[in-house]
Every structure is written in C-alpha cells, then in structure tokens.
Length: 180
Image 1 (cartoon, rainbow, N blue to C red):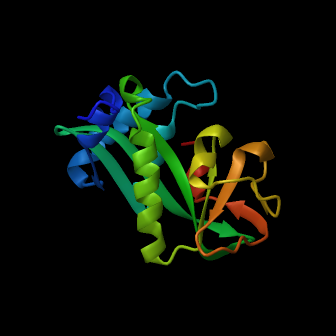
Image 2 (image 1 turned 135 degrees about the vertical axis):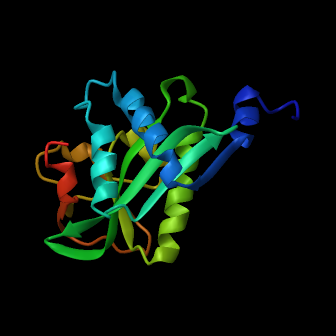
Image 3 (image 1 turned 90 degrees about the horizontal axis):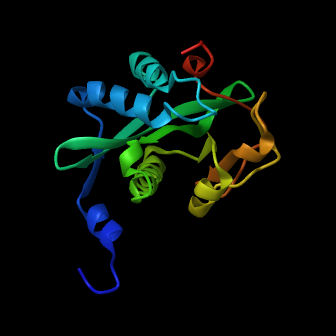
C-alpha cells in the first residue's frame, strides 16, 4: 500500500466480483434481507424478490462480491419492457451490501462490473430506481421520456449503453409487483 491509499483501498483490493452460483443462494438471501432491513424505503421483502427473479429465470445477470470466502454484496439485472416490448434494456436491482461493509466501494464495484458485463450481452441500456447521488457517478440520469408509473420521477434513472434512450413506460418483471 502506498502512502496515498487508505484502509478502504486495501479492503477493496481483496474483493472478488464473480457470477452468483447456487451455493451462494442462502448467503445472498440473508445478505439482501440485512442490507434492506432498516431502510425506510424498504418493504423488507427484497430478499424474496431475488428468489422470485431467480426462480422465474428472469435474472439475466447476478453477481456477488466475495471477501475471503464470504458473500458481502450482490447485484441483479433483469430485462424490462418499454411500452410492453423487450428492447434490450435491463433493470438494475436490487443492489445490496452487508451493512457493516457499506462505504467500502463494494456496491460501486458490483455496479461497474455488472454494466461492463451487460454490454457484451447485447444490452442497449439499463434503468433503476435509486439514489441519484450514488447512481449518477455511473452515468445514470433522469430521462423524462422514460417513465416508471407510481414512483417519484427524480429517482427513476437510465443509462443508455448504445447512446440512444427510447421513450415509453417501463415495466419490470412481474416479480417486482407480485407482493414479493
């Protein structure tokens, strides 16, 4: 470690970002429940959403962050429809990091790795519902021509991977609204 690096930089180097595997499912369930457990915006069911997306075969990409054999973070990407049609756009979420590991750059590493992996899969773009201050650093921004009904528009953001943002109403997989 050089003099300009702090303890967070040292911790970030130890993190392995990899594809989620079946042996991770139980750890991911606990991790997601803990990560969202105390959040005022959470319905406390995000861990069930991950299971439902996985069970439906609707997760195009799921990555975990591993530190010395422990799963400390998870991110999922699933196809979204725009005006009822699949257009090569994906929804990011949920993104979860163990509460005692937040602030170490693990979530950022998961988002960056996920976006890098989406492009070669033919993805044209990605949407999410989240904190503009956090997700803006990756290029996500409010795109008024894309809408998600029932949510504050300032928290619904998009990132075009091919440079073009379509217009229309976005719908996530049914698991997002089935009371999971």
